[in-house]
Length: 589
Image (cartoon, rainbow, N blue to C red; front, top):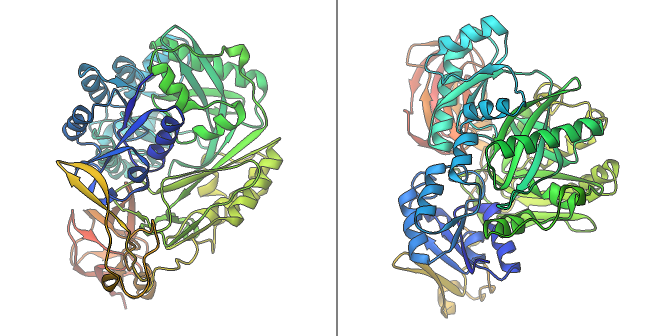
């Protein structure tokens, strides 16, 4: 077994891996950007190294920086988490060439399955069929138009080297093709470092069902049941559950066996997930994610397995300790992703900022996998996942009731979250009757008046200081204890272990005040990635004016009145804060 593992990631998944390693007696190495210097994963790791930079491109997906830290730290293995380099074969190859173990599949399997086009071919070769589509890389929106005219709309444009809904756009008509392709390519490049896209038919009311796999280097491949991930918005999951409910057992078994066929077809090793779309009694291969999934805890809860431990043992060359016949599904588990987003009546707007207070629920069958604590800050430059609230129950009804109770207990202050939207989903009769689909949240669920809660504790919060100071020597992080004179911190002594917490006003008030005036503001901090209008243009209410990227998600900022563009105050690449005026409109008479 390894003695030292480097986690090439951040946030919740880095914390999850660090904890598993600690239980196994393995030393851990964290890496961090400038913005993550005091992050939870850094505080928990045995060692931590600075990458520098703020954005992911400047830090976590700068291969040269990571490879340098791997060499300097003496790590024997690297766990990539999910996102970032977890499905990058070049990174896996570079690590392997250094004599360091990549805790995941081999580069060849990543190449086959990381490219969604070659993955379709691989699945078809073993008799597993996907959704009707094309394997051509899109270079012109006219390709989308011709496909839609022939096979019908809607059409899904998808990142060839992506997953998790990033870089995916749905085209409902020919006149949407150009803008959708451009946006998909831009998101794919920002999140995965490559902008190739392909397309396929978009099923209108399918369920998203996936199969968890684990395979070792001794020829054993086992599936650990199914998960349903149909409660989504913007093609990204909100609530996941295991096992997938309301599907005949013979179909679930067929899915599991098909997933194993796909994995064996590319000599897959370690943890992976094969995703399917289920509609009208049939299932279609969607893609294979060659990494640990965000929603892996629900599988752990119903199977009694620790997937991260299994990943580490498989990577170290150990055989799986069980066979397919040993796998048992016990009860039902549900996971709610607690994202820093304001549901905003269904808009789901990113809500970066400091967490002034975080209280997580406990109790029988309740689990919290988090990446932040009170005082930490959610940055606009990274994913908005605060953590994952999971519950287990003896059946689905008990699990739903337990999750509702847990969500009602949870308190997050300083940022908006999706908790109230999660509650609306869980309480809805469609969800409880398993009559929802991947488009149900956006097309059926009524979130009118549902917000993310009132941010609290941000105004006038007095900053505190720690009794330990983090310093860097040659890029390596050390915690050094110091004694701070009381005169520097006021009469009150600092609380041991407290973290600095910046003063920060509540966001969104400027945007609300400007509604309907022609002073068009942005609802959250982020980066302008495209300006869609120029001075003198005529616009109607709801027309998009600029495209704002925040937390790797693109959001259209629309006109609040009909009129003429009098002034455009931003350009592509500009950073903006919540409430900033980006376009000024002269209202029509």
